Length: 119
Image (cartoon, rainbow, N blue to C red; front, side, top):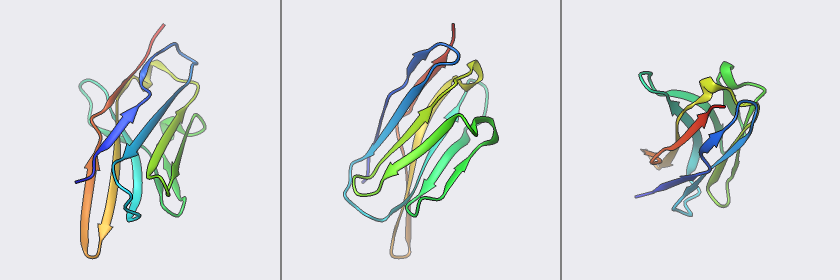
């Protein structure tokens, strides 16, 4: 069983920055996908950004140009650099990782970290 441990959330003023980190408790090199999702109160969980083991990235339109996702394949860690934060970025952010082992697919979620953007 792989565990994802997130860190880096907190309270920040509009226009500020935060960096979220996600560490997977495995040396398994088969984690081909890491993503960050968020869920605001009363809203559905949405994909914010993702990155594959080959470096392909995806960003939601709402965060393009402000957020940057990165990962260290050797360490199975992922980061989300969030700049120019807005109040509408306030949410619980979840790390997601997907692994293939032969024909078997596994998906893991972190416990979530709160990001609050407020003056």
